[in-house]
Length: 434
Image 1 (tube, rainbow, N blue to C red):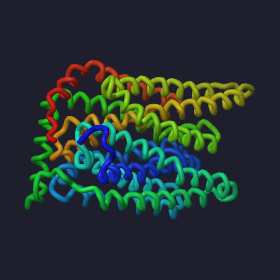
Image 2 (image 1 turned 60 degrees about the horizontal axis):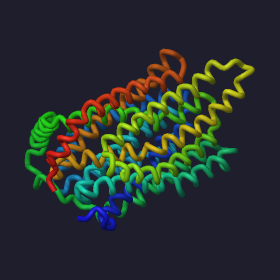
Image 3 (image 1 turned 180 degrees about the vertical axis):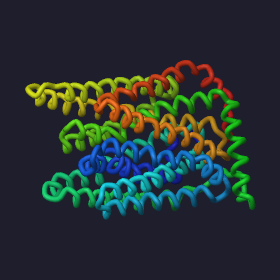
Image 4 (image 1 turned 120 degrees about the vertical axis):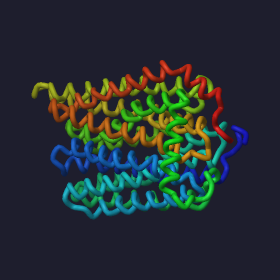
């Protein structure tokens, strides 16, 4: 298939799932719901961090096992559908929960469904397209995701908060949560209809559990054998942890600092809009300078984001009463600047990570390889929020929690720079099976 050819029906249907699930990432993970939860729960940002860590830890343990099972004929779509429904149903039930403890449990279960569906969605990339088109298709997926998450459902949710929320904020949040579930399920229909599992290990064996375990062991040995893949996964482990923590904790962090809730939500809408062209731009630039170089640049940008975020909070925490209002005004401006800066690289770093990994793994074992890819990402996602929450708990200052994330990006940057030779070998070896 030629790189410049128009998107096929399976490619477009696969891309549409980014459009469908991104509303969860925006409304539940990043913008609307974290602000509400931080307001109703004591130390809401801390409990939000712990809840996210618990959910990602559960998915991390399940990922390689589920990935090994999904590589058998017909299993990938079934497992995708199961986790999709877990996510949609428990997101919807969050609209009916009252006490913050039950809300947190609903969030944990819905997030497990969301992460599980994304694991199988990512692995379908090798089924819907070819190696030479993966950067293009993956980047378009993220671009459409940002359009989907930042248009109708997010804008309508902002409308709920700004109108109904003036007199009944819980009702406004519940309507936003219900809208999230409906949008997510409705726009997944093209994926369920058109995307098929092309590559597989054959029919489901009678001893599925033992066969899956053997495949996990062989895949792990294969990853260790190819140093380029192993180093990339390790780098991914650290930088995606930082990226995910910034996504999850940004509005909860801002709420704790006393920033304007409406202003933060609108700023995150700007993030979504900025991310659309930059997700595509990342793949264009990567064609010229290479995916690894582009990923290294994105890691550097995130280090700047963390430093700026620390200053934003620290300046408020140490401000004298007489200077507090001016410090608060500056912090609100800095939040907007950070929203734009995050938008320039958030989608690109995720899209390139997915497509680069897809290019260097065997398609028949894509679910299993992406299961390991996912487990590294999920275990990383446990560390970041936990690190933030722990540092905040020790110091009593949220700004130091943000500052601690720099360590994750520095480690990732060192691996990406030091491992360039191995990355080139992995690409040149062309171990991917068309």
